[in-house]
Length: 229
Image (cartoon, rainbow, N blue to C red; front, side, top):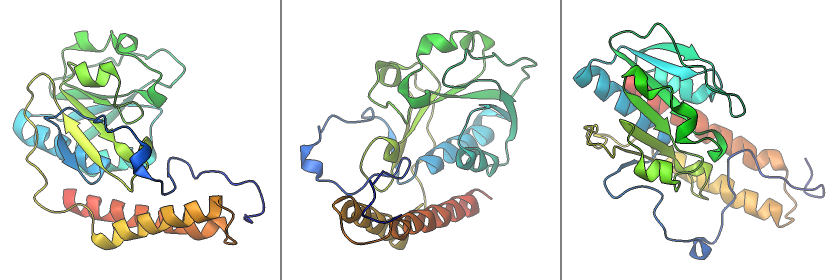
């Protein structure tokens, strides 16, 4: 796409911005464990719960990011699916068994805790993804076993993730190895800067920075997959 045409952002990837204009209100509770990647925060939590709490199967909503599903499956946990979308009532899963847990997503920040009132009586561990609204009262006051967030969805940063528990559920230790390399982060920042220049009317092709975003994503996923295999 030529820079002469009307520019658009690329999905959930932000261009580089002046962060001084943003609020410094934290997007996570003080007791959160922070990661450089949201998917690694999720995968580490699942692996930790499999080893320490006997999780065997994770229920996942039918409307979900394929990369997130792949990260979950890379942990080796069995998966099952229940119907849920941003605009439909949740269909509470049946055939719950010992060792089950469930993964809920606050799609686009438009869902609420009340939408999932039928989940908690199941009596199984709950993980809630608050990536699209980590500042919500639901996220900050949630009584779910675990809350996670991928911060690039709502903040103009290359990546970043967090996991926390407001009810005292034990967290996985902080990552023993870096889940991102300097080269991968540089690629992501480079793509963001090129995106800024493109939006400002610089004579470059949109595919130039999109390909950098894609390269960084592929490398990050490979590193995360290797870590959990």
